[in-house]
Amino acid sequence: SLALALVLACSAGRAVDVGAPCCEFCNASRGLAKYTSIDAGAGHCGETCLRPLLFWMYRAFEPGLSLARSETPCADAGYGFYLQTTVHGHWPLAVELDLYDPGSGNNGAHPAAATRSAR
Image (cartoon, rainbow, N blue to C red; front, side):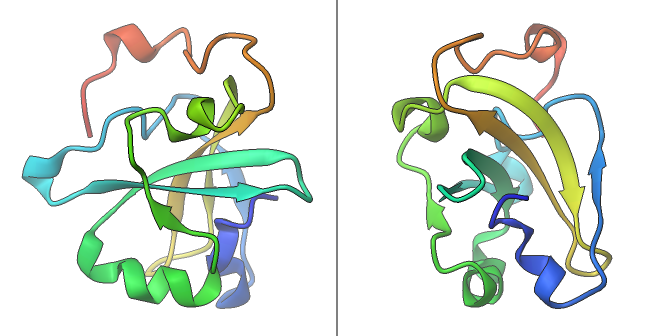
């Protein structure tokens, strides 16, 4: 699984496909910013929305986690094919993230993306 599953180091961990993208847009008015990480070993890029004040905690478990420089950091890095959205970990360290595979496939667009509101 993607290295963003940093919470697996803190808990028994789980990965659940929730079926719809979570993190195409991160709602700044709700205190969220987009972060990204590439797990070259698994061949995925992940995008998630986190509260910046908690970044240090997640970064401790995922050294590759970084603040996104665009709204499409995975596509910008060559991972443009939306694979799935998963939840890794358990409360209080659960992370919902979108996984992307290499290529342009669906250009990072999920079929539901057009009708989804920002989180």
